[in-house]
Length: 124
Image 1 (cartoon, one colour):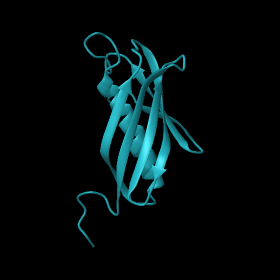
Image 2: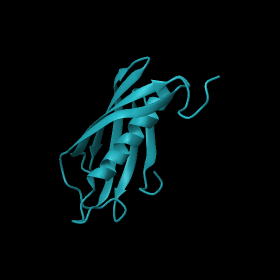
Image 3: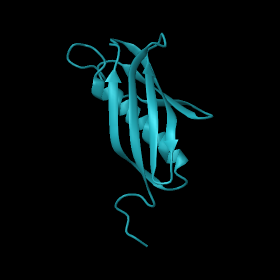
Image 4: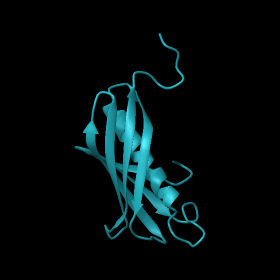
C-alpha cells in the first residue's frame, strides 16, 4: 500500500474509501494508470473492508476481476468498496474506482473466503 501511495480516506455506513496517486509509481510504459495498480487498490479495499466485517476471522482472496473503463494519466483516483454479499464463509465486494472528475476508471469485484484463523496459524 505504502509503495503505491494508497491512503484510506473514509469509512461510512456500508462502504470503505481510499485514494491512490497516478504518477511514476502507478504508470504503465505509455504513461497511463497501470491496470495492475487499479487491481491492487481494489484488492486492498475489498480485503480491508472484508476483514472489518469478518468478526475476528481472517479473510483471503479467492477471485478478483476488473474492467478498465477509462485511461488516467495523472492526479488521484478514488476507490470505494461496497458489499454485495456478506456470508459466514464468503464475502463478495464491488469496488468502483473513479478519477478526480468522478468518472469511472475501473469496476472490480472480489470474492473473499472467511477463515476461522489467520493462514499459517496452527490449529488449537
